[in-house]
Image (cartoon, rainbow, N blue to C red; front, side):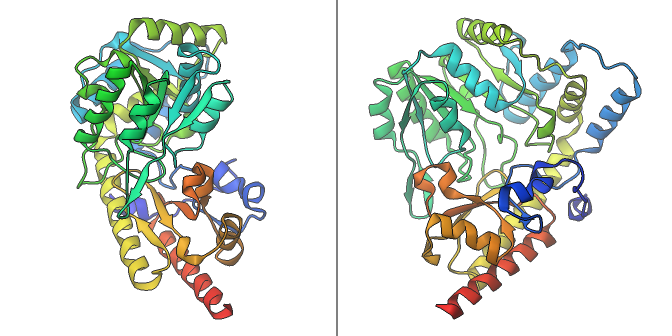
Amino acid sequence: MSDDFDREIDRSGTSSTKYDGRSMMFGHAEVMPMWVADMDFAAPAAVTAALAARAAHPIYGYTLFPDSLYAALIDWLKVRHGWQVERDWIVLCPGVVPSLNTAILALTQPAEPVIIQPPVYFPFFSAVTKTGRQLNASPLRFEQHRYRMDFEDLAKQAETARMLLFCSPHNPVGRVWQRSELEQLLAIANQHELIVVSDEIHADLVYPESKHHILASLADCPEQIITAVAPSKTFNIPGLNLSALIVPNAKYRAAISEYLDMIHVSAANPFSIAAFEAAYRHGGAWLDALMAYLAETRDFIREYLAEHLPKIRLISPEGTYLVWLDCRPLSLSDAMLAQFFVSQAGIGLSPGILFGKEGSGFMRMNIGTPRHRVRHALEKIRQAVERKDQQS
């Protein structure tokens, strides 16, 4: 099955943000895109077959969410994560980012503090600021080449905050939080009645040496926790825009549903439904093969950097197909760093500064692509760094 992940698939001309948006993002279309978080791998065959079968019916009218879709998600969470979810807890939404914004609007008041933990996925910032809430940052601590939560600061901020936007596994730093860390977070949330909106969209993308624990599954009483999940990152179908909020608290669930009804948001796209169900029902073997492939790619990057590019340090990810690169030894400003990768190496990455000031000097690379492309990218970066050193 790994041969499928090595296969080159031409994505140009498909209105791909990652490929057809290169000129707009980086200034020219020749850059190798390793930024936006979708993969260059074909989705599981079962997903493609389900979409083709649905397309074969020539009417694409208004669509209900079938019982089988809920069952597929419930079974996946039980088998893969040991979490028993009730159907009534599930609120289907058109994507995780809209659902985060909806939760904030439905459950907090204007100017109420909402905590985030940078460096973190940049829509977390706008989800707070664009909804008129107060942004409270509790930065992660970078110690001995590993990120940790600052529980002392988090507890202090929880005294006045209403909500925490939590990223697990963490994007961009790749941490898969340990059970003891999650239990400490839960203790703080319980003490201060803090609502935790846990973005667990990368929950299935965990490397063999790590284990993901769904936060709500560890709670004695999960009423204060809202969990966001989706098949989009797991099975490389983000363009189909269907996710789920798991909301055990009936009051919170009603408020979120009422808000979605108020703005007439419907996620019931017939193709999204077909792909969502097929992925969770039949995508397990594909996912296992994917993670084995990505683990080999991650390890290759670690070895390559150590041998050929010591000025760029890998913060080795425990989960996700995104790697966090410490480029501070290159001694470039953030603007110069981003430009260096584009103009000198021809590689389009995500600048770390996008994820908060704590990301200054870092870059995020998407390794969800055939390994020969990763190797080629690293070689181009090595050559660019060598030219830079010669000119210094």
